[in-house]
Image: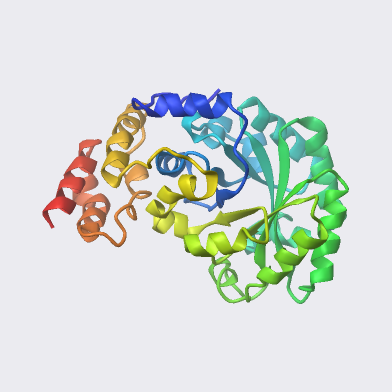
Length: 344
């Protein structure tokens, strides 16, 4: 049902293969990040890694039930495996939205029980739901009764001064009893008053041992770990203890980190695209989106980190973020930026 079906040569075959095969395990995934993991970023990420799970930005139930459904749910076939993250706390509404996700072909629905922002709290969802495990369980059951795709939960280890391992395990047990098999644990507490969302990603200490212990004590559950993970070596270390690793900002700011993931963590024998090949493969997508009415800046902002740590990275970022360059630009801007990296 999505409309983004124009693919570059070579990408179309990989997209069709992805949907015709059993979905890869959630060994690695890119975290849902508001304003960042939109459809343009996800397509770009898929050019770099074929097996990593991609998550949408959080979409509220109200936005889907009372807003523009195609705007929120459209994606490119190449993005599979792809999960829709929902924000909400009303079981009936979440069930309706899960049905929409299934109709649109999503591979998973993830419930947000981790966002600490005050705006989200006012909607009575996000991290504050950790105080109401039975409500979360009711939400999960309603969605599971409505669809056959996986329903997963992303949560913190606790909220405010409730940050004991036992409290987190009790939360997981209640929700698991409702039929949730997969838990993505951001290994920090969430402070609901006094800290901004950014501070909540940095100030509460990481407690990876909580997540490791959860997997040890609940081996039948699929447990993924999230929070502060930046290198492939760290990913490998975590995978000794849990089923999967979710990466957030590092996958956005340093996207070519993902180029090794298929080989390292999925035993893929196909060489990753070079940075130049990623740019070349992106061009047909950019041209198609411009035909649909998108602005080149909507895509360019997501690829600024492609050359991070490489010669010419500054020139690449400058050209793709310069208002004068972006004004009226088309896909050829990316080629000019690529040329600037080679001439630096």
